[in-house]
Length: 398
Image (cartoon, rainbow, N blue to C red; front, side, top):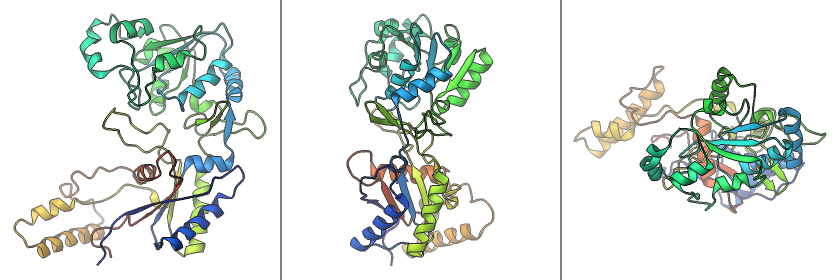
């Protein structure tokens, strides 16, 4: 009798450089891991590859100077508003250095941040302090001095960083930090707006456009084409999904992800005889219970996946079936569960809503990408490739 369900393995990989054949490297190391551990490949196994591993092999990197050059080319001269960036040293700060460098003096850069947290949960005001003192605010849009006077300086719970001070750092004479949750407040001072939000960028653009902004751009439109021959770029996400690479460079989100996952899937089929699914994954979508941060600082969990990962789970809640069996014996309860699963598989209709109660219908790429991200982490594990087996199995599969 089979005693395990889903199994997740981090696969240790070598350090890759630009131009390395990632298809060959991943296939070789997966086969080596399966022989040395050992484990077996099966149809519907899943192989996840971190976006940074793929992007490094592409050499998809831009310099801060190239960011500045693209900003200078696209952003109107004069003052500019930067709307709703996340609070991050390795995500937004390198972009900000390029943005500030690309806006010539004496143009002001006004950063408007939401409060008490950014859109992924990083706090800029202590929540308890906010609710206790927000009645002292004369307006829902306020500047740094009002923030400090009303709520006091705030350091991030995990990083210990004062992000208001950090974001003014690239040019304190030209950068101002403002606080608002209403995009229309921005238009009272600035008519040219660079939208720096991630998941809310389309909504912010729509509101600002209808509100009468003169010029709008978001981070997907910066570095979305090569600045020079050989420069990194991303036609879909631009600077979104980028990350600190060095003091003078940014690693961008990888390009051509769909073609890559299909090619890797084909290579694995040739080598193993198994039809596995493949995805590229970035940040997972899960919330830290201590400080309330949503991990998802990338524009999507998975920028590319094979067709077999389309859709959402269609599952039943086993405990509800078992509990409904009342005083049945263990074997009778197991038989009831097996029958419910078989009935689900054989039905062309939706599952009984009661039996699926509590099974949140998240997309497979988001679920599996989050699982991969948790397994690989972002530190020194050295496992940018994840092998998942048994994810699509049910309780009655052997």
